[in-house]
Amino acid sequence: MIKSFAQRPWALNGVLLVGLVVAGLMSGMFGQVNLTPSQFVGALFGNADDGLTIIVRELRLPRIIVGMLAGATLGYSGAALQGLLRNPLADPGVIGVSASAGLGAVIAIYMGLATVSAFAVPLMAMGGAFVATLILMSLAARDSSVLTLILAGIGISSLATAGVSLVMNFAPSPMSLQDMVLWMLGSLENRTFEDLWLAGPFILLGWAVMAGVGQGLNALTLGSETAQSLGINVKSVRWRVVLGTALSVGATVSVCGAVGFVGLVVPHFVRAFIGYEPRRLLLPSAISGALLMTLADILTRLPIGHGQLRLGVVMAVIGAPLFIYIIFKTRESMR
Image (tube, rainbow, N blue to C red):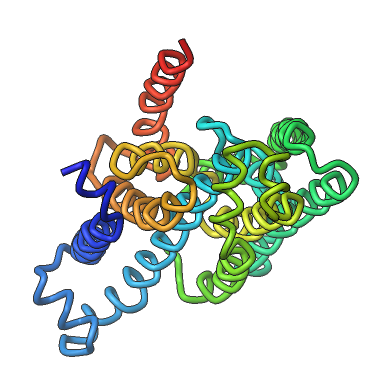
């Protein structure tokens, strides 16, 4: 089966798309009000009573779409960054954009802007991602080395994380602190089409910037000098991956909060089926990311204890053990 997917990657994409449709249907059915498949489909097309139609169209449908877009963004960006940096442990957080977006959102909550406008937190989060992007691009313009981007990303991420801790330390009230913590834990709850219209264009723009980088990423596996000798504009490939990741991931964090491990784990799952060629990893990683995010969101609705699971927590429980496994596998392959 695995060998057949390696020879026909389109077959893997087909299987993943079927799984994504099934997961989307399950996500629409489960919640405080459980629905049957016929009830969900009927409400989706307006063939149900007003109550069910509102639940499906105004609450669950935007939640499903936002989650799929976010997962696809993280999976695609993770595969692109691992190909660019030639490092299987790279993910969107490595360039500091996720942490910077989180800092912008926490500042908005601290200043009370979230009570003024529902768009304040997403806009401030995207503003933080934009600032991180400007810093990265200014550095990349002077020195296009991969090491410079990695070190810059680590520095930006560390600074943003320290900023988040500082803002939380001076939270004006326990309620504000709780809002900050809950946002940082990540969630797709109560997402609306307004969130989609706000973040969607930036996500799609990021995808457009990264479109067509597969051939360059394949060439980079041979080294920068070899890729240049083959006619690949290495600097342009790096610029497009970094900028596209910053735009799309920043917009994703702005509506979902901090959700880790998707961009790290998903490409490794795909490699087990179709191999290590970066270009072939991009599309199935996007579909797998959307599938993983949708399934994780379903798990957040399970009644556990007196609280509610958060999306970031679910992904950490899934991703952290896999991350440790990946490290051990990487060490074994290097021996």
